[in-house]
Amino acid sequence: GAGVSQTPSNKVTEKGKYVELRCDPISGHTALYWYRQSLGQGPEFLIYFQGTGAADDSGLPNDRFFAVRPEGSVSTLKIQRTERGDSAVYLCASSLGLGSSYEQYFGPGTRLTVT
Amino acid sequence: GQQVMQIPQYQHVQEGEDFTTYCNSSTTLSNIQWYKQRPGGHPVFLIQLVKSGEVKKQKRLTFQFGEAKKNSSLHITATQTTDVGTYFCRIPDHGSSNTGKLIFGQGTTLQVKP
Image (cartoon, rainbow over all chains, first blue to last red; front, side, top):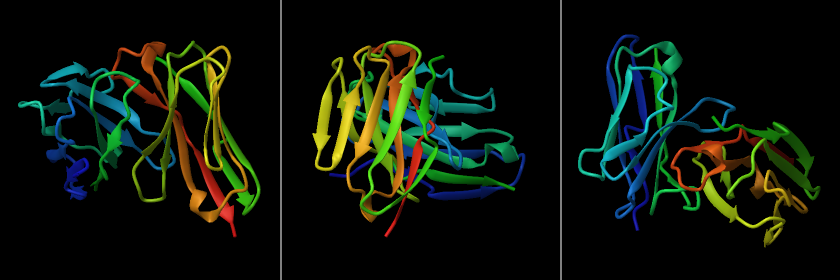
């Protein structure tokens, strides 16, 4: 079956612009996660959803970052007034249920470059 | 929040040599998972460990969970070029299983010289 998909695969934007990154999880997966990965680092937790609600957004760096999952499936990560430091690969993952005992399935990521 | 220390950060080995990476937590964990990320790819699940002292094997890979459930290791016997990549451990924040806040180690990047 289809895995987790993310679009776009690459995004180049100018400093100060607004960007949206989309994640389409595996059908039937109730939990969805966003991570940010910089070169040479592990995935850094940003936010996770159980269904439609953001259960924990404590990893979002500041109020320029926001994520939604209005129908409990597709999620969008929104970044306002982008800064060069936001450049990274943004990974989305989904799992069948919520909790650390569930395997996470990752998408291919969106590489964001802020110039 | 929870932190996990993963060492070493990099390891270069000759093909056929063994490799080990370690993850250490300051708190007792309900479980730990291991993932592999190939260069240019995304993390892919390898295994989960739950029980104290648990040892699991997948062909040349051996995974171990410490008796105190605070540390874990991944050992590869007789590395091959297909083992190249970065290996991450993943733990739940605050050690609890009932959270979606899941923390990854910094990773160990394995290079294998043919």
